Length: 157
Image (cartoon, rainbow, N blue to C red; front, side, top):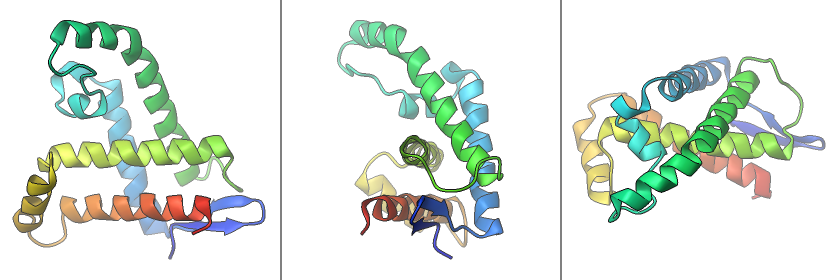
């Protein structure tokens, strides 16, 4: 199945029950990370990167003014996606739903990339060799496919 379908009233989910279950689980895990101790989880550094990598004081100040709002938005995005996946919401996506999906899928890929140790093109290539069989690397690629398909569906490509 295709993850998303464009109809006259907007973008709709076209995922199978299995695909929904995988994304529901990933979204629930992301919500746990966001609700947990961000200082103890290395994923936080990927989701909330330093604005000024060479200036710790400026980065700390930036975090002080932005982290709460970013956390609220990331949590809301994950909640919106979860509602679509579990059938709480249905019909066509509103523009804000499309954005929540795109942002949440980005956060999921960042989270998985951190767990896989993907930080650049070389480590991404190495992760292909390290993963044997169907594993987290396959999920990472699939979430990328879902994100790419959503962009194409939204833009009409």
